[in-house]
Structure formats: C-alpha cells, structure tokens
Amino acid sequence: MATSLRHAEMPSVHSSTDSAISLRAITHRYGDRLALDGVSFDVRPAEIFGLLGPNGSGKTSMFRILSTLMLPSGGGANIMGADVATAPNVVRRNIGVVFQAQSVDVKLSAAENLRHQGHLYGISGRTLTARVTEMLSRVGLGDRASERVETFSGGMQRRVELAKGLLHRPSVLLLDEPTTGLDPGARRDLWKYLAQLRDSEGVTVLVTTHLMEEAERCDRLAILNEGHLVGLGTPAELKSEIGGDVVTLEAADPNNATALAEKISLRFAVKTTALSGKVRLEIANGHRFITDVVEAFAGEINGVSVSKPSLEDVFISRTGHRFWADAASRAENEIAAEQHDKEQR
Image: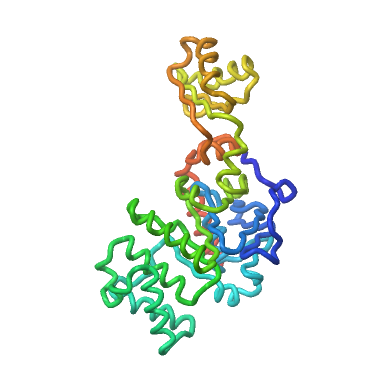
C-alpha cells in the first residue's frame, strides 16, 4: 500500500494566488479504478517542476487534466488563476503543451508547422511571420525554417514541437515525457533550453518523467505512486529525509531474503526491506555497519554495497517497493483505464 501525503502533512506550499499551477485534492476515476486520489500541490512561477512516477502512477491522468483534455472526477486545478474545468479556453491561452506523441507534420517545413499552429491561436499576417522566425531562432532552427521536418533528427523534431508550444508565448509550458526517443546529447540540449526558458523568459515548466536523472534537474518534484502523492520537495530535500547511507545486502539464498531481513532488523534494531533477493536498509555510517552485519550473519550474505541516498531510495522508502515494480501490469491498467474513459465520453 502506497503512503500518501495528505494535505495536512504536506510541506509548506504557496497559495493559489501566488502559484502558476495549483491543485486541490484532485481525484480521478476510470470506472472502479482510482487513478488519482486527492492530490494537492502548487507549482511556483518560473520554476521547473517535475511529476515523477512509474507507469500507472497517475502522471498521464494528471497531465491530461492540466492540459484541459479531461475533467477531474473531483477536486480542482487552476493555471495562472483560471480553473481548468470552468475556464478551459482561458487556460489554453496561458499554456503551451508538448505531448509525448509527435504532433509535427513531417511533410511540412518547420516554418509551415508553426504557421498552422499560429492560425489555431488566431495569429496571422506579419505578427505570425515574425513570431515563427523568432521561435525557430530560439530553438536553434532559424537556418532550417524552410526544410521539411522529415529531414530532421529526433532532437531537432522535438525542438520544432517546443517552438510550436511556445508560439503564442504561454506563461506555463506542459511537457509529457519530452525526451522520449532522444539520444543523450539531445536530452541534455533540451534540458539546457528549458533552463533558459525559466531563467530568461520566466516561463513555468511542468514536465512528467520516469527518469531519475531528469528528475534531478527539476527545481522541485511531486512523486506519484498508484495515484497517491508520496513525495514533494526539491531533489535535495527529498533525499535528505533518508538518514545516513543506503546499505544493500545480497542474500546467499535469494528465497530467504525476507527471513534474513527480519533477523537483521531484530539484531541491530533497524528497519529493513527485502527486495528481489536483497535486503535494503538505511543507517548512518554504513561502511562501519556492513562489517558488523557480515560478521553476525557469516555465510548468509554474498555481497554488500553502500551508497548515498538517491531519488529511487526515496521512492522505495515511501512505497516499500522499487520504482519499476510491476511496471508492465500498471501500464496495462492505465491503458485500459484511458480506453474506458474514452468510451464513456
């Protein structure tokens, strides 16, 4: 069972009046399945905020609600003071959206893709021409404006997507798994550009991700698991909640890891977790502890490791399981739930 952060237990956040995005007890159901369970948090102006979670955690449902594609079953959400349910048109004028699935027309040039986007927002004439030139230059594609997108690399195509999302100069940029399919270099370039948007343009960026290294780049994070908010804060704050070191012990008999975890817990008065044939625990001065535990349980431990806390460790500490536990089944559940939602509309 996931541990959720109820509103009274959550860290201090800004009120909706000084937040770019404000969520209040957002709940969503797909039939009998609860995809989001009373999630509340605020996103401050001009920050990069991450929604981190495995498949099936509720990220996609949250993203669809914030991008006005879906109404929540309960609770509410505001973006730049406008309610996503009652004032969706106002919200859409304030947000730029980059979906995980590609939305560019590869048979058109980069400039043509942006011009079509501009028409959707009622931009035309010289204003549109100037805006297209400006946005393509900002993403480093000014000299490729007339070339067909099908000739671009994956990273360049993603930059066209960004330019489309920014064409109407939104205050908030929503990105769903934006680096999917990109090579490491293109990923780094994308994150550098997002930082520039935040620092130079004051744009608030909300990004969904399942990648720990990307979550580390965010100013603050909301960690989701099975529809619950299980962590909220900066990456450093979240990791600091785990005292000392993370010690992992490889059981000589993987099938006996649970029993070994219980014995270690009783012997040393520490909280242990058995995961995939290994025993995991958090303790100060881990390098000293491993000497004691190996001596105490000689023959029952095949290997040891000591590391500083990571966001994965935060997730395990809050949920009792690994980030990718049962990921396949959760992904299937989320796909089935989304299909149910479509059928109901």
